[in-house]
Length: 330
Image 1 (tube, rainbow, N blue to C red):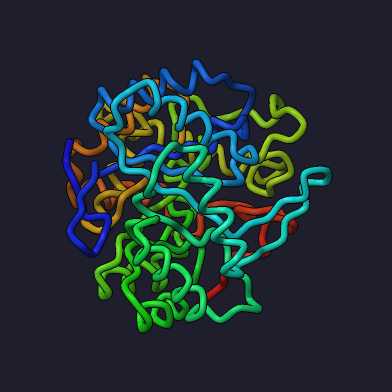
Image 2: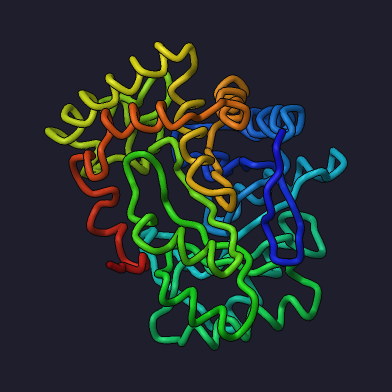
């Protein structure tokens, strides 16, 4: 396993992490036993970075990780998030970056995880009514108290990152980034590099599209996250599959998995990138880990660019109701 720097204090973690949203059933039914098996597989493969959030299953993902840590020596660096509030009955989202709210949510996360300190704490979504400078002051106070080890933001703009960094050290920014979602190349990856901030791509496998067996939207159950997402709806999905099939053929010609190739491409975009694919399969996770040792040459990069030119994907990455809270730029 290769390692990359996560925090500005020099803390390093495995070059890829494990996204734990699926532990809460966002991509289909699961069990605590299945999640624990995935965590054991991650540990055995050398993956030591876990990414979760307070709203993943309304605390379910954190609780599952916490029960695993209770039964096993903690060898993981853990990131969690707050800032999204969900109505328990309707599921409607609002955003809250108030200091008192964040403190309550942080205490809840620490309790569910069974930790006194979380290694990295993200502002999951911005509350536009509160200046990001004020949010930084709140997070810096948590850090001074020893409750968090590092500060992160999710889905913000490069301009917001610069504003936050003027107040104190930001350790990581998390945004969706993959071979079909490349907006971060329009300023965020570069700004993170310039400021010494880790860039953490979530959904680096295109929500399953760059796996050996891409998802079939016809099998999505009610409540499944991808249901209604434009890229997974017709006619967009069929158009997208014509590109994906070419990528699968390239991976086969290179004697590797599409997942391995997609992760290797992501890692090659900068030594400050730490992708966090989400999976509940040990075999799939092993394919992702193989991306760390795959030799990504310029020739292969050029071949990928020919097959998947920037902007190739049909349809938005989010449905209209999913966009609020994501900062636009460029």
